[in-house]
Amino acid sequence: MFGDMQIGKCLKLHDNLPIDDSIINIVDGKVKQEVQIKLQNVECGELELEMEWLPLEQ
Image 1 (cartoon, rainbow, N blue to C red):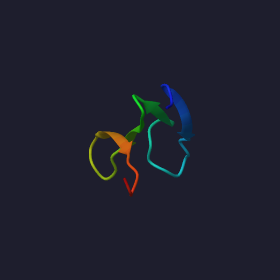
Image 2 (cartoon, rainbow, N blue to C red; image 1 turned 90 degrees about the horizontal axis):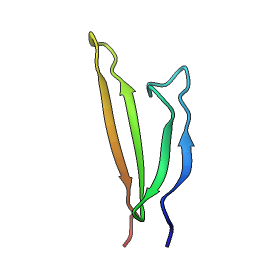
Image 3 (cartoon, rainbow, N blue to C red; image 1 turned 45 degrees about the vertical axis):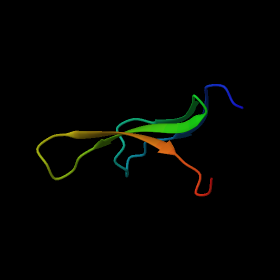
């Protein structure tokens, strides 16, 4: 139904942990978002997540 496209963006703010803005895309008909988060209370580290949004009812 939809081609690949950007449908949203979560902005990095000074009081939250994401490293960069997070883009929400439709890829192959699926809604996906990639997020990079800086770990706290550790010497160093980052966590990279790719989330796929699913409907609660199918």
